[in-house]
Length: 362
Image (cartoon, rainbow, N blue to C red; front, side, top):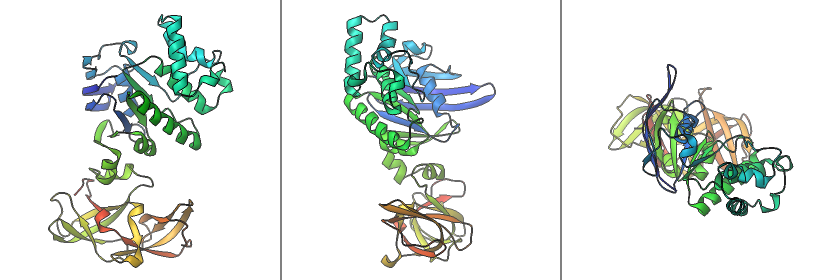
């Protein structure tokens, strides 16, 4: 296995620049997930690491070696794509060993590596089957196994679970996490699904418009987003952003009135030194950080529009007293709120975040 280093990566397609001066270090054995909205450049960045995209400028180093001008086959990486890309006329065993056979590996070595990959991925009983006889999850395991047999320096995953249904996605997330622990391999994973990012990553790299917005552990990004984009992108359902006005400042505490709700003033702790009395800001509150109104503290009242009963938790989608500002409230267990009825909830001040109207964290 090996560390990956990206130095000043830029990529343009004609006059359109899609990657802007990307600098990133990925440690040996680390599981890093690139996440961001469609078109943010995450797949282009992954393909740049693999050599499938030629850089406009910059360097890619794998294991300390500059591989910028190497062909994909010479970089020692293996890619797993969204499409399984299995040969339909070959058995699972033949698909697993195809790359090795084309590379001139000895028959015994091919058999040994195929058997080892099949054992890791629980494919041993399926080695004689054809792809049409496999489920979607089994086909994806074969595609991953085809990468394992190459014993690469790093694994690159490009949205590998996008074609699977919800239940299979959960199962395959578990399989990929187990695989990482078993192999101790360097893995770089691209997804637009931030649930996958949160559950799989040692470190998440959030991209927007070809630039790195923030990187860190899932917990760091969830609890301490650098800006309103990261705050809104990480977490499901997304964070609520409520417009307010600063009416007082005392030390690091901002007292904010929320314009869209009949609510007492809310105190929000700021991280930096920004903010001025009279300034309009956005207050970020995650759905799970609303509390029972009976526990005291500032109380926010909204009108319930849609209720999602999910068993262990419920989500109330409401609207403020201005009739426009939307808010999502998480409740434990079954919600007893009726559609159209008012719902009053407390606010946990320590969990609220302040953002300037330019999106920066205060």
